[in-house]
Length: 40
Image 1 (cartoon, rainbow, N blue to C red):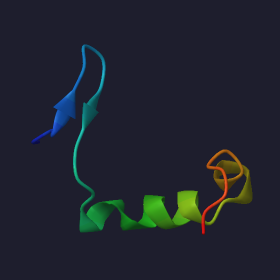
Image 2 (image 1 turned 180 degrees about the horizontal axis):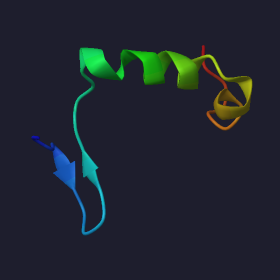
Image 3 (image 1 turned 90 degrees about the vertical axis):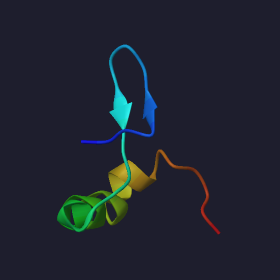
């Protein structure tokens, strides 16, 4: 797996098609989105 940003504990990578179900679940969850602030 290729990461574009890493720290001692975390690695960040680009989204893939396999991530789509999780992304949809997160982005449509009102409790999660309540922490994201206003999105225009």
